[in-house]
Length: 132
Length: 172
Image (tube, rainbow over all chains, first blue to last red):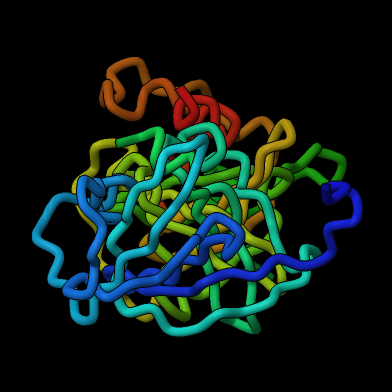
């Protein structure tokens, strides 16, 4: 079991949606599968777009991928788009959401990682599954 | 030698006019510093004591999903993540468009800090405390709760906004 205080790095999968860069903890992801190669029956697949309360409107997925997330014995798929990289980030480069956003936050976004000038919103996929 | 009454009267009239505009003040009079900015062609002001810096809008803030529409997103200010409020939408003044003059005022009060997008910053001035008046009674309902006073700038009325009230309202 990992001692939380030993955490110095976080491995995240970075993907884009509607111009936003999002990152999610690789530890939550069991598998990354192309939608047409999914061979599991009775697997619920959710659209990431809905779970993070992005503004209404049609989202055109350019290169969709399904992330298989296991949380509390529940396995579900979350469809994301345009995944670009797997990054290892120092936890010191992670920032909490600014106080005003923290107070208004209804989504699964829990923090912000900076990679140079780039802002990556960190999404908790386990929390995301609770929203569905 | 005839006394140049006309000239002295002219000077006195000019001095009175300047004092009336708050541009000449008694040396010992207490002053406050204000940031004057524009929203939808009206002037507003913050106390400088509540303003940390004024930034140009170099690129669109990063959108954060699930937020109220008056929160535009977040920006990276030299390694600090700051939220940005669209004060037009927040105060019901319509939608603003970005121009080269658009500025983000980083304001802070009572432990909360955020960027506030404004059309442009007109001035940063010292004014005598005595020239800050109470808000006008018939002020627009949408901005009433945020206005804590008024002043004059370039012969125009300027509503002084309270950063703390704005932040409190955004979190309700």
